Image 1 (cartoon, rainbow, N blue to C red):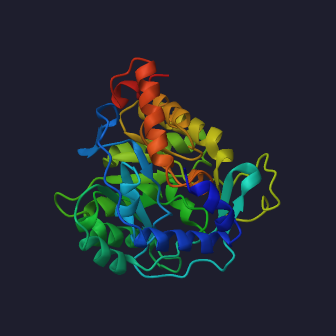
Image 2: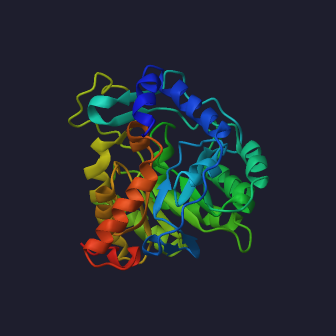
Image 3: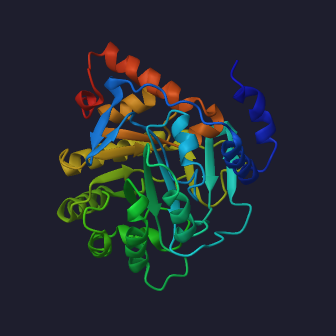
Length: 343
């Protein structure tokens, strides 16, 4: 019998951030589950990395790289830790994390709270290198040169990262999204790529969903010109359309079911703008195998989860992988790669 439906009311009785912290603590204590036998239909080769499953954990869950292996043992094909900044920072004042159960959503204004890159580097250096763990890097809120902070993050975390994600799309650090403007983005990526050690990990870029089509085109051109290895589409939205929850007016980024349509459309926009030349990773409102399949058919090679875990529990990654495999078989696809962009 699944235990999560019994535990969820207890977690939901707690403040959302406290419940999140309790979950991380519990994962530290739980024995590791054996890794599931990989389903050959679900394997994906992207940026010279062999992903056993396209279903990954998005950044923001394991901010300080405390339990990546626990999440891998829950059936995730890869885990992205962070966002990590060069120096530790407290983030925004509490409360800063809100469940919207009426909307199957979450609003957060965390503000890149984390223990800093040095602490996470020490943790990741001590783990056996099994399973793909990416590192999401950001800039400190009070940094005088945010572009330099990204270069620092790339240089510091490259030795322990299977891939690095440049996060310039959080709405919770004032002015951060301005780095998505073409000239600033070009300068940032040039510095980040130059800071990557020879033979270092691939570099991904995470973008916002709140972009005009002209912005999508400009970002795509810069990423193709600079040799970015993949785009993650997308981060949280500042939109509040159609929400029912009393927390709907809280400031911050909205994730979960209300983001699904916007994130899917933005994925299609980036697929068209890049002409299929740049691998895409989908995030935002994915809660089922059908959701994942829709993103893959729209052009994504991988998908990432976060908010759905709050509502569906720790078995979600395995369930989505099973549902996705069944959908591929039903429609005659032998691999994920055959289905990418097939809509």
